[in-house]
Image (cartoon, rainbow, N blue to C red; front, top):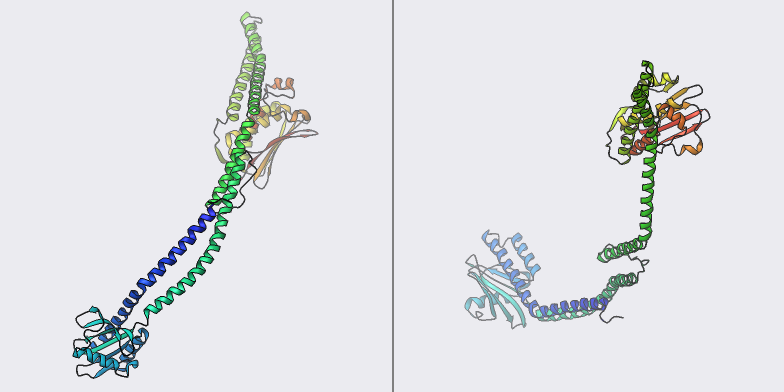
Length: 492
């Protein structure tokens, strides 16, 4: 056990403090209790004098009510009193002074026999207050005598009641209670100091284990005081150190992962450039070939020249559209395009897209069925939502087959609406479903080339829906394929 333990120091300090307080109280009682008692009794006599003076001034002295009030005050303060007029007739006398001893004392003051008795404590114009000892009963009194209203005589006295003996008894009582208080306080201080030092010792043990890199030990005593807060900080420090050391130990692995990630990004960049160059190679070759043909005058007839120009313009348009799609996809994937979230009618938006794609629908000889039940208001970016619907619809137009039927449905749910675009035709092979949303991925490359597709449309849909934080997907049927997405109908 530590010689200078916190528990021992606290016990010594608190018990010493209690002993000091008791000693101060003992000395104070011995030296100042008697003086305080004298001042207190002098105040009682002064209050009695003022009450009698009021009765004399209002002329009620001698009446039953006035005498009863003065008797009550005298009994309360243990005061004996006599009030007499200038002829010596008694106007008021407390019940305890029927033997005339106090009246004789007053007469002694008047004729000058008692003027030098006792110790003069206070002298005023109408009265003086002394501390005297009555030789008849050897009792010490505080005595006041003089005139009320300049003519009526009075004398009052109150016994000191053995103040020294009272002080001695008080000191003995204080000594006994002090011993009990020291004993109880020693037990309580020992108990509470143990409550304080035990968590401190626990923290000391935890710090020792932490110094040895053992971070499993945790402070479990709890509490909302300063030690509890310190314990919580120890726990957080332990977790932080453990986490930091763990990070340091895994630094090499992280570096390796960074290298692998860099290689992966480089591979993706190379693949992206390869895909772009592959997609551009065919239209550039066609443009170059037909442009050379025009320059060399391979065919001089106007119809051939017009055909050559149409091919060049068509391929240039495809290249332009692919570049625009790539720029839009890049902005979406890197979060560079702000969303304009607003409430709009989804039904009206779909009708507008159908109207703008009417020529493509008629060229594909397809039949479109739009199942709707009036306006459906949603919260999203209206322009980007139109891009999603247009991509789904043009994709369905380009792949419609069999009975050449396209169905657009809106299924309202509790907080959202699901929009689905179905086209009859061949299902997508299962192994290709998860790759549809990748850039430049094409299930049927020849067919995609035929209508000018470049495998970016569904990647744009994916980027838009993920920026909305909404669900999207594709589902195969025996007679066709359905693409779908969801939007919120409530602002929350």
